[in-house]
Each structure stands twice: as structure tokens, then as C-alpha cells.
Length: 454
Image 1 (cartoon, rainbow, N blue to C red):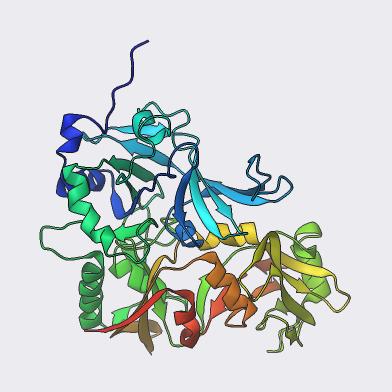
Image 2: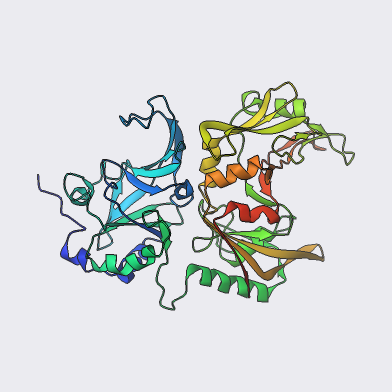
């Protein structure tokens, strides 16, 4: 059996520039790139440390997120403790752009520290990383740099820059300026015009601002064309259509690695996860609505609603339910088995969202988010949106910030559930579970918060 070639120690790999690698990554559809300087303990035996908080969860996309019992022999990790892990769709790339699937790649969340580690990145992969990742070889060598590119389909492309290589010399200055050198950091993909992704985003938003007001529309994912949109919630769809983003077309960020949200200076929807526990799931939607729903206040006799603002530890009078965060402390410690639960007055769980479920939703977007203010006018029954030249940019977040904001009543549950009997006799059922936030509390969700006017 022939030995697999060392793709990162090869001469051509040593001479590869950051511009050349960026071109290869862009050829695979990569829109965001992250890197970290590997420490001696970052290897196949000890896993790769991605940071002393859970922010990596919002950088590296995960699927199949689950709880599991560790098999570690380390005294610091008890065998009966629970950790969280998720699969990473990773391919290692060589200096020609060829890729090699790493089917066992995963991220592991250690809530007790908290920290995130990268694991299984060599198992079953045809690429030869053993020389630079196995501790008995050169896997403890200082100065190795891990590079991960992410495309809009949440696929990851890995590359390893070795000490003394041209690529290492090109990238390391960007990482040296980081506060925590051995944590994962974003690096800008070089462009011929020298613009960053933030610059490109602002340029596009300025174009939208100058074009306003814009008739309500929505991009058709099949045709790629914008179509008139008559419903009231068209501000976000219209802005996305202008940026060439279709509704729910991708699970990751909308534009050049940025999630873009239209901000009407009222509540902003962050997540729309269906409950995964409580009576809502065990007994079903209809039973839940009969038990906790209430008549429509507009006088519609054949309609039952369930809505209202539900904040932590505050009873909602309409439904008689109280939202509680179980398994989280004000010190920032959280139990992997924790949940957000709506309890009724009999202490029965009406609906709940496990932390694992919420992490999977928070993981998909939000690492970089632009909030764009807008106003709406109606002409001839058509809504027109004017987008402001004032934009707020949030960068760097993690699940702890989300759950802390729920605990502190900054994020709240604001559902829009209904059952309505139509004239035809059929029942119309609407499920809309959403966690929302007031614009004044947005800055609490990000490490860096900036305001831009243009």
C-alpha cells in the first residue's frame, strides 16, 4: 500500500501565498475565513482548542447537535458528565484546490469551562495530516496555523499553514494583533479592490438607501427573480431581494458572511424554533391551543389565539404561563440538559426548548449581523420600504450571550399561534414561535458593536 503524500509539507504548499489560497477557497464558494495559531497541545490526541467561550459555535457550522457522555480519562472531566457535540461538514484542501472529506469531524462543547474543541478531523480522511497533527511526530510544533473557510451551504474547507511557509508569513500578522492569539479569529479574504466584506456590505446598503423607496418584493429561489410581495412583513424580504438573497435559501449568513436584518425600530426576531418539549409536543398543537389558547380580542368567534410577551420569571396574564430558564446561573454556568420552559400555574411544562435545540438555531447565523433601519408607506395598496443610511453592526457572539439575555429579560418569547375556522369549514392552523429582542438591547448580544452612517 503506497504512502499518502504529505500535502502540507510539499514544496508547492510551502510557496503558496494567501492570495493564491484565497482564490482556491473562493473557487469553492467560500465567503468567510477563520484562522488560529495552533499551540503545542493542538493535535489529534488533545483535540484543537477553539476558544475559551462558546463563540466558535457561531463561527463553525454544526449539524446533528446532541448530548453525549465523554469517554475521557482526564480527571477534570467526570464520566457521568454530559457534553455537547455536533458534526462539521469538513473537507481538507491541498495547494491545488483538491479536497478530501473528513467524515468524523466534530466540535465538542465543554459547558463546565466553557470552551470548544475541534475533534475527529483526521479520522477516515484520505488526506495525510499525520506528520503535522500527531503528537509523536510534528504535532506539537509551534507556529502551525489552522485555516477554515466556510461557504454559504455551511461546508468547511480546512488548510494547514506550516511554520516558515509563505502562507504563514502572510497570515500571522493578522493573528498577532488578536487579543487571544490561540483562539479562532476571522481574517479578511483579499480582494483586488482592497475592500473588506464589511466595506462591500456598506456599499450595497448605500445603494439600497439611494434607491429607496422600494416596492415590496420577494426573491423567487427557483427563478432567481424578484416578485411582488403583498403581505405586511415584506421589509426583510425586500432588503434581501435587493442583496440577491432568497427567503430561507441558505442556512448560514445572508450576504458575504453577514446576516442582514431589517429593523423597524420595534422588536426584532432572532430565532423561530419550534418547541421540542412540554405539552405542545407530547399532546400536540390542537390540545395545547384548547388548553392555553384564548378567544380573539377582535371579536372573531371562530378563532383561538396564543400570543403575548413572555419574559423570564414574569407571569403572562393572557395565557397564565411563566417562562423560566432552567439550568443556567447568573455566573454564566449552564447545564447541557437545561431548557427554556413555559410553566402553567400547576407547574406543568406547557412548552419547552432544550439548550441543544437552541444552540443549533443560534449556531446557524448571528456571528456577524447588520441591522438596517427602515420606514414603510403604502401607495395603492402596495407597501414601499425606505432603508436608512444608519446601520448597526454586531460581531462576535455565543450561546452564553443569548441565554443570559433571556435570563435578564432582554430577549423574550413572543408567539403568534392560532386556530381559525374558515367559512369553508376547514381549520387554519398557524404556528409561529419566535424569540425577539428590543433594538435597545441588541448590543448585549455581541462582543463588538458599531454604528455606521453613509
